[in-house]
Image (cartoon, rainbow, N blue to C red):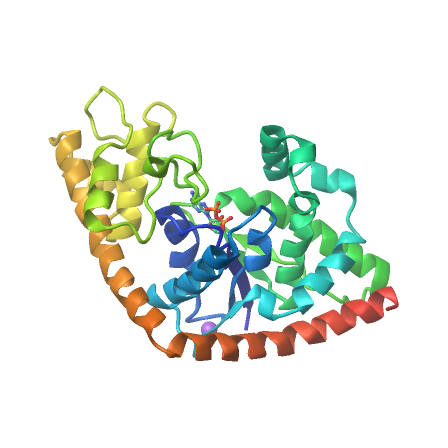
Amino acid sequence: MDTIFSGIQPSGIPTIGNYIGAMQQFVALQEDYNCYYCIVDEHAITVPQDRLKLREQTLGLAALYLAVGLDPQKATIFIQSEVSAHAEAAWIVQCNTTIGELERMTQFKDKSLKNGRTGVSAALLTYPPLMIADIILYNANLVPVGDDQKQHLELTRDFVERFNKRYGTEKQPILIVPEVKIPEQGARIMSLQEPTKKMSKSDVNAKGYISMLDEPNVIRKKIRSAVTDSSGKIEYDVENKPGISNLLTIYAAVSQKTIPALVEQYAEAGYGEFKADLGDAIVAVLEPIQIRQKELLASDELNLILDDGAERARRVANKTLQKMRNGVGL
Ligand code: ADP
Ligand code: NA
């Protein structure tokens, strides 16, 4: 059976972009694959976090994983920092990755350009090796992520090929070369306020994203004030109508309808009607998830599931780590 690994950072509350680009795939894939879904809290601390808030967001995200429909019987759900093999493997990965490769990562370039190289942590540069470690420890051959992670997956593949060549034999490669799995639709949900920019939970403008825990009236309001254009026609045209196209993508993802079907349905409608219906459609999906998340956070179930997940994850991860250690001569 193919193995899947993926993770989300508890660096804020997940947005509907995380839901559509990542979580919806997680749920669909758990039926047919051996899945590992992680809350990557070690990634989150590459930028300073409030410790209490981080802990709260970590548990909140774990509860959201379950609330959207992940089943601990079908997938291993765990917190990254509870499996120490991640940090240890990341060191071995760093030792086999060049500074040049890491400096070419667009996410690093963007963030270091914004804050200056002296203003960001060294881990902002070395964070892709931790991500590589996450993936290889579980022998994952498929990694479901949004579009923004494509480059990091390329780097992972390059790393694995190099590592196997250096330390393995042709007959017995040490690590598995993973493939990226990007959703056909919704791989890049855009900001509601700047539809040419990716929607992100770390956006300073909260109107730009819908958090998975936003209240119904907030969701409807944010959709109503989403930036569109003045043509008034509901058409899918990313180049010329990025705002409406983004809303159509979100609508399709939360509704079982296709974009062409939605365009036809709203051929005679104005933006106001379209946005009101979209707000309702998002609320219809998120409200039950929010209710379930609250129940999970109030129960003892969550901690048991996470303890069990960490134990299962450790068993697999430690085996791979041992192979890596042997490989490099530790
Ligand atoms: P963020 O960028 O919101 O901090 P993460 O880095 O934790 O999110 O990414 C978690 C997952 O969500 C990744 O698979 C990422 O590709 C996906 N993702 C993040 N933002 C979006 C988006 N705007 N549209 C689609 N997928 C996204
Ligand atoms: Na499964």
